Amino acid sequence: MPNFMMSHPLTLTQILEHAYRIHADKQVTTLLPNGTLHRYDYATLYERVQSLANALSQLGVQCGDRIATYASNTYQHLELYYAIPCLGAVLHPLNVRLSPVQLTQIIHEAEDKLVFVDSAYAVQFQALQDKIDSIRPVYFGPKSTDTDPCYEQLLSEAEPAYTWDIGDENSPMGLCYTSGTHGEPRGVLYTHRSMYLHTLAANQADVFGLTEADVVLPIVPMFHAMAWGLPYASMFTGADIVLPGAKPSSIATLIADTGVTVAAGVPTVWAAAYPEFRKRRADISTLRRLIVGGEAMPPSLIEVYEKELGVEICHAWGMTEMSPTGTLSKLRAVHQNLTDTEKWRIKAKQGRPIPGVELRLAAETTDGFKELPWDGKTVGELQVRSPWTANRYYKIERTPEHFTTDGWLRTGDLATIDVEGYVQIVDRAKALIRSGGESISSVALETALLKHPDVCEAAVVGIPDEKWGERPVAVVVCTEKTSENISDILRQQLASEFPKFWIPDTFIFVDKIPKTSVGKSDKRSILAQLIGTQNPTKKLNIQPSRKEIEIC
Ligand code: AMP
Image 1 (cartoon, rainbow, N blue to C red):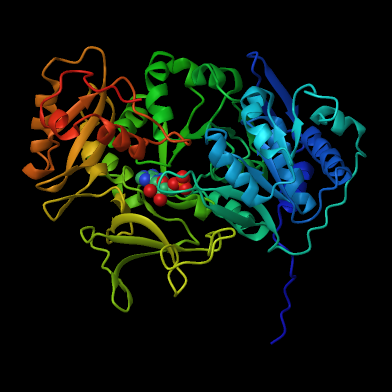
Image 2 (cartoon, rainbow, N blue to C red; image 1 turned 60 degrees about the vertical axis):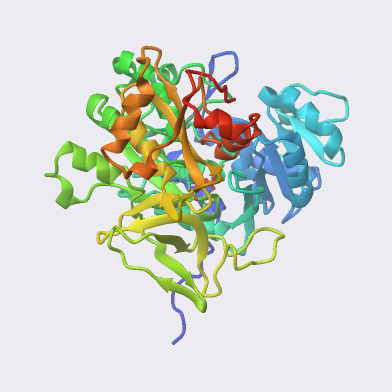
């Protein structure tokens, strides 16, 4: 049979054109470093994106060229999010929190042609510049030298109109490196098609559920898995966008000033914001939903947001490799009559696959992988496939360590899946603690510790132990008013939930927990510091006094 349907390529130019024609008056607001708000509408953004595309062409940018950004969440960065891919080049947002050594490797591997540098990071960028001197910087702010072009000047000198011409929906549009939490960063090359389909999936009512009436605040950095696709999802739907710049001094003030309805970020951001949100309830009254992911959202935090602040938590799981959304935890209609505690327990799971994503729970056997049952008990490796999941890494051969021969991505996450399809991450395969031949889930212990009202943050790691192989150590941040015998209290609390051998031998109380470049607990660093302490076995086998070992 012949195909009688149009073969209309799925490209980001369609998202940009739709946003301009249908939602031209919608607003993009950016918090500037001086605390003032910069505002313009989609029509102005569109005109600037066209000029930018001409300016990039003038600078010699061609289809397929990688163009890096070293920038925070601002309107200029949003313009680059559209101009670079719509011109046919590849947007490569650099993670500004990676070390100069990691960034140099990444930039050389990507062979970036230009790098756009935010004023907020111009000084920090100098440490990198002499290592990548073949790559031309373009500064958002005033020129640093006579030879480096400056962003606004490029735009003002460029032709205003540009005709988009992306014929092939499988052309690459973006390159994001994994955050390097579990090994060296690896590049993921998205296509127009994969990002377009991810955008449609993200915009379903039961996924992020954005509408034209929303005001969306991505706190998640634009270098972390394309800001979870929100710059594209928001503009396709016609929502207003609020960009927080490099360091918003108060998220509550930004919400109050701009009427944010949906905000997105890792759990740490929302744990830190909660005390202020609690005091300033009237100021955050427009906020209806938080999109949270990157790490498990503890049920205790879900509860205070939903019950006390009336903000719905949309807990999602995904990976840079998945553009990034994979699953989302929402209650089903049949759950409406459950008790609150049962509801938070379900919402704290990583959720069910969003339409378009296929999951399987697998165990490795001598001849491939065996599928495990969805019974909520059996633990296996979570494997995924979807139109927006990578099937290899950029410039790295496809290896069985990351991809199966029958076409699935090995996530490296250990999980259960229940009969309703809810995934619960037990641990990263590499973070699972093996003690006396048995497994201990660091995630389960952290979640349990966070139930205590005096515990603000918790990370559990396994340290080497001569007798047991590994033993858990809990690193905890407490409130100031915590009682002296808090470690005994926490021990008792855990003992009511877990077998005796799960209880950490040691509790270490610290002021803050080290974070990775995308704001997750940095267990590799914690472990290195614990093992690096002189004579760790001796030190860690005794009950340490408060703040005995400072981590960070
Ligand atoms: P990244 O590519 O930096 O976004 O990291 C992806 C990894 O973060 C996943 O493989 C998980 O280990 C972890 N992750 C992401 N979202 C969640 C979540 N909601 N709960 C637990 N772990 C998560």
